[in-house]
Amino acid sequence: MGRRKRKQQTYKRVKRVPKIFTCPSCGEKSVKVENIRRSAIATVKCGYCGLTKDVIVNSISEPVDAFGDFIDIYYADQELQRLEKRISKLKKEGEWGELALSYSILSDICRAKAAEALDEDEPDIDEANEWKLKSEQYKRLEKDALIQLDTLELEKGIKTDEDSLFDETDGKVKREKKIDDIFDDPGFLEF
Image 1 (cartoon, helix red, strand yellow):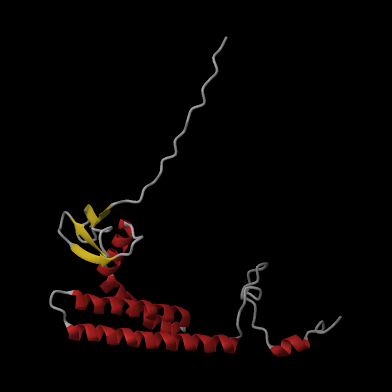
Image 2 (tube, rainbow, N blue to C red; image 1 turned 90 degrees about the vertical axis):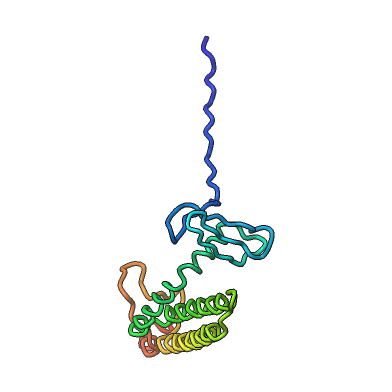
C-alpha cells in the first residue's frame, strides 16, 4: 500500500520597509536614521560621506518617512529651478490648475528654505525674510491662478462627471452645449 503524500507548504515572503538607504550625495547604501523614537527631531546620517541632516518627525513616523523628508530637502533647489521654468510654459498654455499647483509647491519650498536659514548655527535673518517674502508672493500668485481657473470654468460652463468632455462611445470631443442648442432641440419639453 502507498503512503499519503504530504502537501508541500509554501511560504510567502514578507517585504519589509528598509532601514538603510542610498545616499543622494555619494550613491552608497549607507544612510541610516537615528533618534527617531526619542525626540521630535531625527538625524539622517550617511556613514560613508558623512552627510548629516536633522529632520522633524512625529510620533508615528518611521525611518522611511524621515528619509523621504531628507530627500525633499536635499533636492529642493533643483525642484525650485524646475518649477520656475515650468511656470512660464504653463502660463503660455493657459493651464491654470497646474499653475496653481506649481505656485503652491514653490511656496512650500520657500517656507522650508526660510526655516532652514533660521535653523543654522548663525541664523541669517535677511535671507530668511527674503524666502518668506517669496513664499507670500507665490501664495498670492496661486490665489490669482485659482481665480483665473474659476472664471474660465464659469465662461465655458462647469463640467461634471455625467457631462464629460469626451464621449465614451466614439472617443470624439463633444462640442460645448449652449442654451440655444437646448431650446432648438425638437425633443425639448416633449412628454
